[in-house]
Amino acid sequence: MNVKPEASAFEVESRKRDAHWPGVVSLGLGVFGLVTAEFLPASLLTPISHDLGISIGAAGQSVTMTAVIGAIAGPAVVIATSRLDRRLTLWGLTTLLIISSFLAAVAGGLATLLVARAVLGIALGGFWAMSLALAMRLVPEELMPRAMAVIMTGVSVATVCAAPVGAWVGETLGWRAAFLIAATVGAIALAVQVFALPPMPSMGGAGLGTIAGVLRRPAIRIGLATILLVVSGHFAGFTFIRPFLETVPHFGVQGISGVLLAFGIGGFLGNFIGGYLAERNTGRAIAFAATGIAATTLALAIVGAHPTIAFIATALWGFAFGALPVSVQSFVTQAASDEAESAGALMLTTFQIAISSGAAIGGLIVETQGLEGVFGFAAIAALCGSALIGVLGRSTVRAIS
Image (cartoon, rainbow, N blue to C red; front, side, top):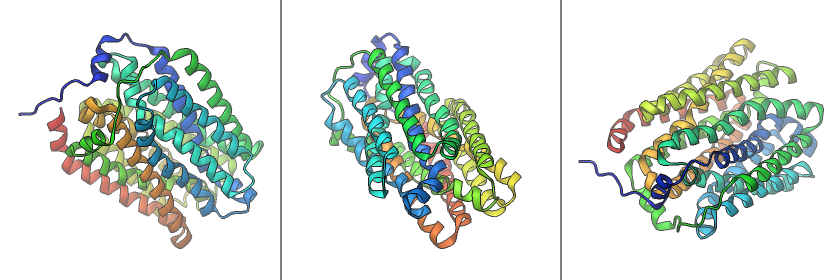
């Protein structure tokens, strides 16, 4: 017989609280700014490398830096600020987004750029580690899916806008202007959060013991292993999407912007489909997304030299990846809603480890095997993740439902 965990303090407060939708919207705006800043280098690697006098592979490590720091910062921020009003913590994280984007815009070399991306990693890690718990503080339990959909819309819109707009701004105004725009978005998000978020006093929060306890749950371990495989494969390829589009199917700047826009629109639509599927079976929703990533990156590796195929495969890749985050969020919510901050910290750390390892492995593959090779790796990693959640996820989904 399955025994449901006792309701946590977050859940008890959630049931008593009226929905605070302005606060939820402010979280969505904040994540839009964070994800926009996170994704910018993927569309700007070529001009960044030329301007700073570094290789494409070295420029790609700006993605790695954000991910590595984010992996450490997620649980560290949750634990270190557990006695603070969560509103103050969020304001601080959004301020770091502004500082990071400004530092990147004025970077004169690789060292300053990496420092800027490390600051972004702190902001990104802290926000994602707390996002589920923050939503639980703002709406009643029964409205959590709707609240997470609003927050994830910020991710979807950033996915649509960041890469193509970044490529266009980088070509017309320079890559530094793209980071200044990201800083402006962060300032707007901070202003909205100051006015929209209600006080959220400390409720004790997570510690190393609670994080370790959540990690012992089989469903959490399977979910995290799947994230590690699929996300590392995705970012191994996506980090180098612009150089691939330039040198394999030979798209110009306008063509690249169009392809990246199609990727973003696909991700926007995939977010809603992923939510629809996750309402019915979270494990199958994750497997659907992972299989889609594997199929589309394999197509790019084998026949990506054909511009039409490259365009279609990239758009469908965006659709598949768009379905992944909301599916994973739903899986983790089912598995550990009683320890939302601890589960969020573990999920964030796994995501960032996957992003950093994917970008680093991708850089090595690009240097030794070429751009097509990195998409072959992405396909294999995503397919392994799909197989893992497809085989082992069935029993865990039944156990937590």
